[in-house]
Length: 468
Image (cartoon, rainbow, N blue to C red; front, side, top):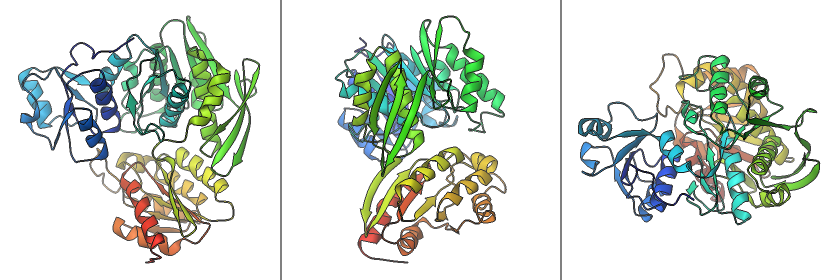
């Protein structure tokens, strides 16, 4: 069982240590006894948690932040080449390790399950990690979001399993060699790195090729992109392919999904055994994620019956239809959805959970490249809401693109009859939404950027009875 920091990673320095993926690796290394250091652009709860584990975290980026005995510098694809700490590492000859290679080194010697797909990775990874914990198996895990139960995105466990989210956005998931891999779906996204579906298919095919001999691919039987991947890899020697879904030819059948407000009851057929369990988040897509986790856990040697019962212990993960709170009879939910397929799935789930109330959405497009390619589809997805507020594009790591604004989204939504209000000033949003909302309504803050900060502010306005 892995219990120490891998060779060369005993004194790592993380550039952007507060990021979802980076902070998880840093946390595990600190728990394994490494002297962790790093830098981030701002203070955050994540930074505070890492300091509590003994990590040294600097705010801002400067060459002198690298300690003289730094063993390696860990970076993600978001770190720009002119970062002063990265330049200092090159000047001093300090090895630079990509985040994916650092994570791969932590998996050595463990029974690894890697969860991939255009949508649903964080949720599915979380479901499996929480279930294994509930069964007392103490898995290690690295997830792109904070679990509602343990409240953290990563953990070094004493058990035999490692559950990891496998990011396809920059092809970094090619670094992993899991015993079991899940592919939830495959759609065109991350347009700065993928020009076509053929490139997506080829990238996922490479990922599947890294599964260890005798390992298992758990793959969605209902998703067209995943079915194409299945056709390409099914006959590979040394690979077991297990499909799941509602399709008649699925190896693990989803027999029924019954919504109960903000939860669902799921019945699946696995290995001839009929299993019924509860998922504490609404929507068919989350039910399918749970079945994927069930199939993967079984492939990794965990009894399916016990795992099905343990899935009920999953209570959610940050920003995946996370319940922010309720005030004045209005519920506020936070959604990370930023791709049209994710937006559609979450809004359909919210329509089912809203009962007789309305669904009001505050949407923030994420990335200029994604908005350029998918702005019209984002607008189409927003027609599922009764009314929506659309913010400016959240740039994240990208520079602006000529002619690319959130108007691509609002114009498309209006053309389809949606009730859309563009608001460039985020400070105006809480008052505007409080003025729109009525008892019984459900408000969803949606997007992968800082729109998440608006949920508590909307609640505060509602609690105080303030309107615009």
